[in-house]
Length: 358
View 1 (cartoon, rainbow, N blue to C red):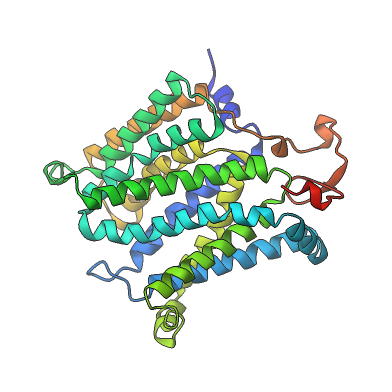
View 2 (cartoon, rainbow, N blue to C red; view 1 turned 60 degrees about the vertical axis):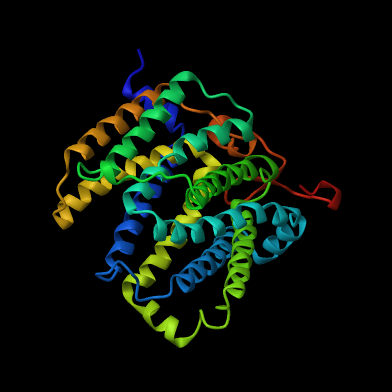
């Protein structure tokens, strides 16, 4: 019988994997609490959300460049970007999908009550499993599917209050279709990004791939702002002045850290485990909300926590193994060798001709 230690090392074969997992959860929990703290009594924001999103994307872009240059050099950065420009086009896919997701979120919340919205969004767990099988051509076992279904149930139960069950409205209309598009765009973007990091981009530094993603993302958001007639006003003094508060600046910084950590998460872990991390956020957020804001933990939250822990325990017995050759780094302890230059995250070929581009 497997011990908890055995299950732990199956989930996190290296210490850094566990660190990435914990930091990912901590950043998202902090982000949720901070964004909530910036809401006005009517649940609206004093700042322009489009301005904050673009500033965060720009900060992610700059941070990725700085990290790469600190680990290597500016000359190496220019060379690798030039040699891997074909990836720039591939990253338009997740950039467009993330842009679609972010904007559909506002539309969905304007037409669905929060309970219905969050209940529907929990189906991202199962959709991620289906897309993972399709994109990576890997069949999940019955136990893995059972754990994902229990995880979905746990997340759904947590969002339902006793007096909310009758409020869940799932009438089939255009807005239900839009929220399904939102779920698909979010899940496909995450799994597809993992696919790029572990296949087409396996020999490309993670930070270089981040640069491609964030350039594409900034472009997509600018196109959307142009379509909405806001491209010349989102950086106006009127929109920038509210952003200069400590909480909003913290949101931008925290969102930047999330972007960097997510790229490492998908590189060294996988989208399925990311779903479990998102679910465990519910547990820790409930506890922290009780400790800091006095929010009581209801019976539904206790059931949710139990279901999430059972799902995590079942999954840890046989987790998805989706490592790539790029993740098997060369180190002294494994006696490996590599005819390449070691960058911050992987072995990069010393010389890449134009015919070797991804």
